[in-house]
Image 1 (cartoon, helix red, strand yellow):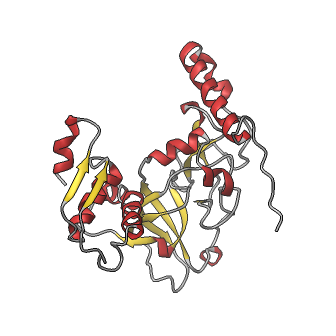
Image 2 (tube, rainbow, N blue to C red):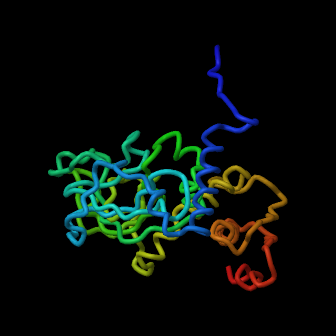
Length: 272
């Protein structure tokens, strides 16, 4: 079978080199000529923008990234009424859904979530830099980043299993930096009563990454098949690392050896 040839420059994907140059340019301008930063922001790249009534809560507000670069690429966008952002788990580009004027327009396996909190992960920074492969492949520019969501179910189709007003948290493949998200209901879970919305929003990406690591190591979802169940966890004080430590305890893996980047993080790692 013939394979598609991928062109490279100096051994690198041209898109990667362009993203690197865009970030260097952002650094140069922000350091030596910050007044010119607005000129680096693309204009007219999103036809859904509408800033005429930014305080109207019926309108979805989201953070959009126009192209690779620095923080100047992050911009607040107010969408027209009845629009929700969605991730690649629902559609290929554009990153905004079609109008949703009635419940009947919501896919049967989805809900509209009034998003109240989202987490900021390292992957989101990579998206802004233009170095996150699946973001470029599946969505492109502009893109609304983010994976973790937590909030209130706002609209549901019949038979979804969820009710309007349910407090839920979960994950979406991009699109979380938004006040309203159309998301598959299977990717949501009910927020426990003793967990705040903001705490719930901090869990999915880190926890699922940790669970996947244990799955690759043969410790989950079945009981570990290894007699020696010692685990070595790098960055044990970080987001995924702290989840690995806690899940390792739940899975009764021992001993647990954690590695941290500096001594000031030792107490934080031991706290888990």
